[in-house]
Amino acid sequence: SRITNHLPTAELQALDAAHHMHPFTAGAQLAEKGARVITRAKGIFLTDSEGHEILDAMAGLWCVNIGYGREEMAEVAAAQVRELSYYNTFFQTTHVPAIALAAKMAELAPGDLNHVFFAGSGSEANDTNIRLVRQYWARKGQPERRVILSRWNGYHGSSMGSGSLGGMKPIHAQGGMPIPDIHHIGQPDWWSEGGEMSPEDFGLMRARALEAKIKEIGPGRVAAFIGEPVQGAGGVIIPPASYWPEIQRICDDYGILLIADEVITGFGRTGQWFGSEAMGIRPHIMTVAKGLSSGYAPIGGSIICDEVADVIAGDEFNHGYTYSGHPLAAALALENLRILEEERVVEHVRNTANPYLAVKWAQLTDHPMVGEAKLCGLMGSIALTPDKSRRAAFAAGEGKVGYLTRERCFANNLVMRHVGDRMIIAPPLVITTDEIDLLIARAWTSLDEAM
Ligand code: PLP
Image (cartoon, rainbow, N blue to C red; front, side, top):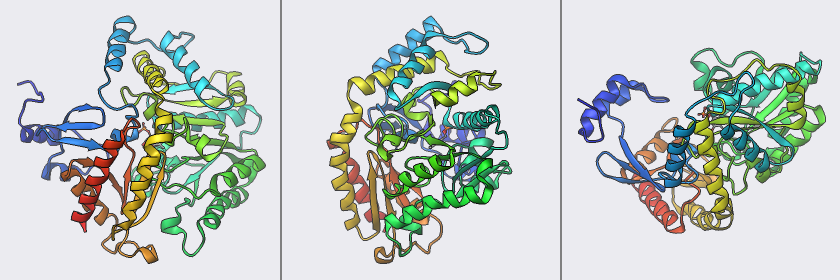
């Protein structure tokens, strides 16, 4: 029989466990306890197969910036499929959705980031970046500049290239990563690693590790540094204010390309259009995905500055994806950007949602189990600790308390994610103040129950 939303939940879960391999999930866990089946979503709420209304404080995977189920998006999708369902942008062809979206992205991106290379996801866009920066230096007559530097606990995707750029050891451990010529330095996570230093001194120290690494490898071999303006998947690590200006200085001094991975921070998440603007940096390349289409269709890309694009354009770039600039995804992304602009969503984050949430988020540190509470725009983390005076970690082992808290949240119809013993949020950017109240109330209940 046909598999639809009307089948009993247990039946759907059994079929899911039997045939569907899930990302970042242990199969045995799925067989033991079925996955929650999400059937519908509207605004910031999901509905599951048992009829629960769940507040999604993670915007899916940090992507549903305009909220779920927008009618305008449905109409654009239907019209685009009728007009041009697919064509590619290889071999001297193009189409209007790709042209219009690239032009719009160039308009929104700061400085001379005027050129877009499309991909289907953030991982693919970062793979593109590896190729781009190496090709750039090769064409500049410095082919030995191949090394790309990145951070431990950064996340840039999960393909071989982007997974190598990332600094997640459990990802590296499976499949032989990192690939050659990618090296990592420490992250600016003061809460966990700052010891007795002030956050500002610690931020400077961690930035200067980049300079030390460049000298160790040899400045003539380094092509680029990549970082997320605010680390997302690593646990919403908001760097001390001293960090990014020093990174910028070092990239300038050694003439290496700076890549800002804006897959999460792009399109309003930080209260600016791009996290680079929030952190005051001037990248040569930005990686984007997620909020580009608010997750309505898979699309990502690299936004590239004039100098790099001009050098690359001098020869054929032997790279591309079947779905680079896919017309349906591009049309949806364009409509998403129109909504973000016309509804002044970035201003809503900066002037309303962030200030309102910031007060309540900081109050979570009154909870006995919550140490640090940090928020940048609408991405936030709280560090769970048995002893805030020492910024201690739980002895229970990697993430057990975080996992338990996440389970309590889920039971209370709130999606919050845990990264080790940090709880993180990144709600849709259109969240209202009433919805923020509900989010915080459910978070308090869940923390109390997890204690
Ligand atoms: N870069 C960052 C900063 C991300 O957070 C992610 C995904 O979470 C990626 C890249 C990879 O994007 P995708 O999952 O679309 O491949």
